[in-house]
Amino acid sequence: MNVLLTGGAGYIGSHTAVEIMRAGHGVVIADDLSNASEKVIERIEKLGGKKVYFYKIDVCDKAALDGVFALHDISAVVHFAGKKAVGESVAQPLMYYRNNLDATITLLEVMQKHSVNRLIFSSSATVYGIPKTVPVDENAPRGCNNPYGWTKYMSEQIMRDACEANKDLAVVLLRYFNPIGAHESGVIGEDPEGIPNNLMPFIAQVAVGRREMLGVFGDDYPTHDGTGVRDYIHVVDLAQGHVAALDYTENNSGALAVNLGTGRGYSVLDIVKTFERVNGIEIPYRIMPRRAGDAAVIYADSSLAKTLLNWEAKRDLEDMCRDTWNWQKNNPNGYRS
Ligand code: UD1
Picture 1: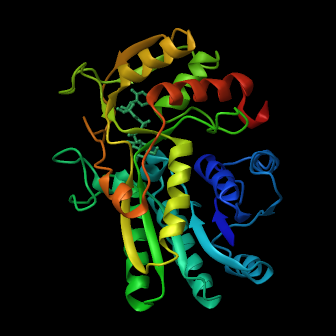
Picture 2: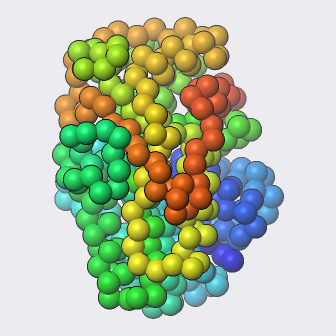
């Protein structure tokens, strides 16, 4: 079958495109390249072993999106397209709500018009806000502390309501924990624009000499070493979770929320130490104040994915650190290298 990936040129989208192709499907990508490079397309083709149909369009442009559905026999959609910087969303909330919700609604309208009833959504553990208890399962209370998070929360709700109205529609809301790492080939990886907001790309840029020092946001959390604990998941495991979710929509309908995590928590300093040990590179760091809005500890109860999707993460923290560095050292300036 052919699968449309909105935002398929991005970090998670590109890795997912490769895994979907390896599962034997055709891939069509719609991406406005606002936070991605066109170079990634030929690299996906190389790793996936066949042609990718690429359209440089904004998913909010209904006529353009309709044109893609008219040209290709699309059976399912994986929806990644959206803005994702937490700080930017606090500064420009209306832009975030306009863009991310418009993309979701436009996509659902065009899917409906073309009778496409299988959808995987790129959601986030951010919908759990600061959890009261860990591990977090899919029924944990939800609530966000920034507009980016609310756009994920609201998109989930819009998709649930669409499923209520159309009993043929099947949606899997994948709540990602912290995706890091890169394809083991080092050919594709994460390439953030400007100063990285997230931990692993920052470490990778320190390792390659683009940044002097990592700032560790707080060492007074109630954790084993005082630094924040997260559930880091290898991006290729995450990508394979999308293939499992696509398979699930073949014989099921309705909306299903599923965590994609490993079920293990690591601290910021665990990540720094493992990266240093596995790659033989020192990562200078200094302790800084806590970052506003950060939870002390969050990690997944990932059992639902195993039960319903027959998926679980296979790669460990060493794999994540090794593959991140393999990508970054081969591409010191990302896709601009
Ligand atoms: C962040 C977002 C979350 C989003 C996710 C996507 C915030 C508050 N949360 O999650 O909404 O879904 O990315 O990947 O931005 N850290 C440092 N120094 C750094 C960067 C991070 O010490 O330079 C620490 C953080 O305090 C945290 C951990 O590293 O304890 C992970 O941070 P990050 O990679 O930004 O992910 P999250 O905050 O979990």
